[in-house]
Amino acid sequence: MSDEKSLNFLEEIIEADLVAGKYQQIITRFPPEPNGYLHMGHATSICLNFGLTKKYGGYTNLRFDDTNPVTEDTEYVESIKADIRWLGFEWKHELYASDYFETLYEFAVQLIKKGLAYVDDSSSEEIAAQKGTPTQPGTNSPYRNRTIEENLSLFADMRAGKYKDGEKVLRAKIDMAHPNMLMRDPLMYRIKHAHHHRTGNKWCIYPMYDFAHGQSDSIEKITHSICTLEFVPHRELYDWFIEKLEIYPSHQYEFARRNLSYTVMSKRKLLQLVNEKFVAGWDDPRMPTISAMRRRGYLPESIRDFCDGIGVAKRENLVDIGLLEFYVRERLNKVALRRMVVFDPLKITITNYPDTIEWLESENNPEDVAAGSRTIPFSKEIYIEKDDFMEQPPKKYFRLAPGQMVRLKSAYIIQCNEVIKDSEGNVVELKCTYLPESKSGNDTSGIHVKGTLHWVSIQHAIPIEVRLYDRLFNVENVDAAEGDFKNYYNPHSLEVISKVFAEPSLQEATLNERFQFIRKGYFCLDTDAKNGSLIFNRTVGLKDTWAKEMKKA
Image 1 (cartoon, rainbow, N blue to C red):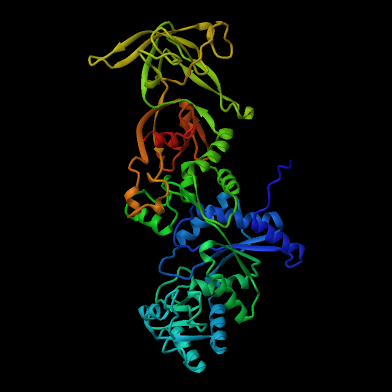
Image 2 (tube, helix red, strand yellow; image 1 turned 90 degrees about the horizontal axis):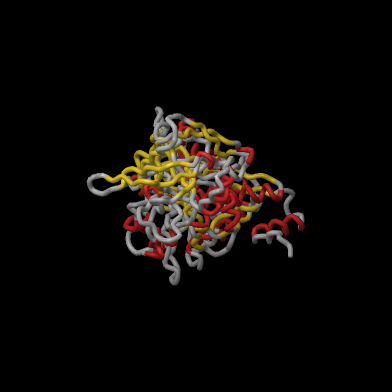
């Protein structure tokens, strides 16, 4: 049987087009609106558009749909470019819908001259009423039959700034009884006296998305304009404008967006989370934005693997975020440097160990020999995790207990001899002995133990802060839940442990490195780590515990 992956429906279309000689090269575009940060839904589209032209030859343009000056900002433009490059892609041309404002205006004039567009003085409420309903035809605007000359003059006056916001619009003249309500004389231009981040105050009229999108594709000779399913009803209008203007026939294709469980991927909702301080910003590591995932420690290869793994379909569905985390672990396991960090310390004194410091060698990554090794200081006073000791253990308990032996990672076998408690009966220290001949890598003791614990030398341990992230919401399908989506916010989505103890090598950690804190999960240095402070984000746990916990609940 062949392991070759079957083609998705878009690849089938492209291969058929190439075989038929319809195109010499494939040209796609990624057209974000610069009014927010990119999220995982955009990542799917990025991987698809850039991936298709990489596979079949051609190129992808980055075109910013900057037709709404009120919501757009250069901050978003720069963040979008950074995200795409981080994902591993490079565009052929960096373009903006605003590059085409003059051409789009001339296109509108052409349609007016053909009697296919008119200036309407109706209010937004009146226009909505004129549209009718899906089962009832609309009614014509009283301004629909203005002469071509009157429409040309009024449209020129709109551009010249003679009217206030909302006072007039330009509409396409199609059919107010059309079964597709988007074809019922849709808006082409509206008046907005607002500063544009690129064109300044040059324009006070701005094209609507449906008018700017297809024409921009045509100008760039986009062969396959790939959109998500909500644009299926728009395709008819997309084709109508291109046909009536007699310009290059770009064609729109739709695929299903992939939603992630336990989160939202609406820019409007994400902006609410930011503005209402549910999260610390667009790059808060709990957010589904690409910048947040980068800060959390995800690798771009993991996101590309995920997008490739879920594939392309024609039906929307909810993808378990656990699948994304699987791909994250797969990549991190290969590259993450192993380090020992104790979150909840219990002191051990090794009574027969000399008052000296020994430097022990430990591998950086057992999955990668080339990663080499490091040396770790060992002394007679160390910390282990409190939950690695039980005074009255059950059967088959292989960690530390009175009289029981364990191996310290990359060090020695120790045995617990004495338990020291405080006045309230809490265990505060263990007295242990070690077997000098049991040194890792040179063990001649002949004793085999099943438990191996991580540890740090108390004298050499450095304090760090760790931030443990969990699901942002506590219901699987947030969009389907009743009421305000913020009611399902998970108050335990961030746990900060302000002081844990790490081996000293983490003092030299950099933002580009990824770590596996042994038996704890994958971590990376956070951008908040400044002026000597060490703050680490948990990227993902070693295994998926969420599903098990939800079943218990």
